Image (cartoon, rainbow, N blue to C red):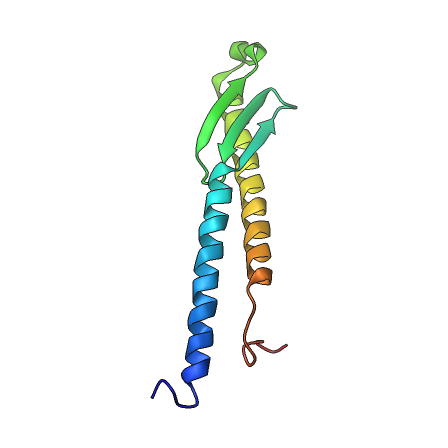
Length: 112
């Protein structure tokens, strides 16, 4: 039955699936190499994060060490959140780019 009317369609679908998986693997590798800086307090606290949301480094300006601990906690949280937002923006951009590079066979335009 693979040679019937759907045989070519299944072959095309399998090829697209392989292309998507290959591109997805490449995007995941790119994202793991991505580095973003999040910051708060006009740069008094910075967070270096990779594309997998792993925090690689936190830098705190020494002038903050005399502040109330809750101020420091808030600034660290804000810097982490800033880095997370930047990673998410990169993720969306990378995935959108990936989707646009995968050729879709005839009949798979999804309303186009």
